[in-house]
Length: 136
Image (tube, rainbow, N blue to C red; front, side, top):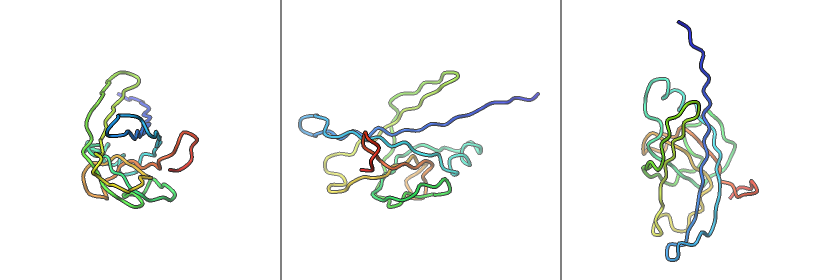
């Protein structure tokens, strides 16, 4: 038996900054990332690849061979908000929330999915951009 199957992995981060007191949206940004070699290695070995979301303050040229963010700042455990198992398109949405007292004064510029808490555990990598595609 021979089976041909195509796989397309697409990843996007939607970042929303809200006022902690009023709930007013202060800023929105998007990060479209690339899947790193680490992700494919973990997938073909049936290992977890997305348990945390890491964020950082660096910049540079994204490369699929990377295993870290440019300047790692922190991470949080990702929580499921939607899981759709459908053919031909499945969707898995997860999120994290940074509280008002966390990472005060930091400007986040990069983000990535990860399989653990260590800074070298990322499986995707993206730079955060505004609605016009400019780095934030």
